[in-house]
Structure formats: structure tokens, C-alpha cells
Image (cartoon, rainbow, N blue to C red):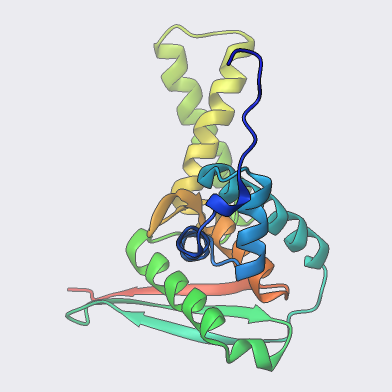
Length: 207
């Protein structure tokens, strides 16, 4: 009937729906159920709600000291490629949990697969950024592009550059709709502690 808003029946949310959302986001059972209820059963909207909450939780814990953690390794099949990642949290208890260990292992696999050069954009040396900007300017000049649009295009190209070379900006290898930062943020929301990647190193067999 026209003009009548359909009322969503909360009983339509099944345990299978809740479990599916938990697998997708890593959220707890009650958080997943609440998100589905608030989203009126819309799965994608529920994911967005959980991610926004995760971002708020992460922001609130961002200044907490991370003095515990672990160093995780991943060696690719054949032994010619691998990585070490140091990932920190607040307590030794969390460092020993399966959820934290899984995150650390995933990040070691990410480094092995995607070969980041830096942790975050602020770690990229200024001379590297300048060199990239100059290359972009030359390319745009050759294309006849001038004016205010040039700076916006350069910003976009730099962002893409960061997504290639900075671990925290890279698309997550298991789900490219998320960045590595998104994955860490979700883990913070679930685990309830601040989590930081401290450093990483990638090894490849040389000839």
C-alpha cells in the first residue's frame, strides 16, 4: 500500500544471520545481533554500523600504552619468501589469545604478499614524495592539464601510491574492500585493547 512504511519483524533475524555477520566482521554475538536489529536486517548496513563503532573504539584507545605483543612470522611455501611482523597490544593476556595471534599471522602474510615499503604515509621520506609529485606533474603537463585540478589529481595519485607502498593503507589480501587499518580497527573493537603494528621486515631469497 502506498505511503505505508513496512515494519521489520525482528524475529526474521536468525542465528545464522548473526553468525554470518560475526564471521564477516569478527564482532561478538550480542554486538552482531544488535547491529542487525538496528539495520533492520540489512546485512551491509549492519557491517557499516559495526565498522563505525570499531573506529570509535579504536580512537578512544589510541593513546593507550602498548607494551606487550608478539613477533609473528610467515614463510611462503617453498621457503623462498617470508616476513616478520612485530604487533603490540596492552596486556600479555591479549597477546596470547587466538584472535590476536590470527591478526598477527594475517599481517605477516600481508607483508609477504604485498611487499609494503613503509608502515604509514608519514613514514615515507619527504624526498620520495617530492619525486613522485614531480613525476605526476610532468605526466599531467604532457597531457595538457593545468590549473587547480592538477593539485587534486596529484593528491589522488599520491593516495594510490600510499595504498601500494604503505602497509596500513594497503587493501587487505583476504578482503580488498577493507584496508589493513580497517582490519586492525575491527580487531581493536572486538578485543578491547589498543593494537599497533610496530615494525615489519620482508625477506626474499636472492640469487
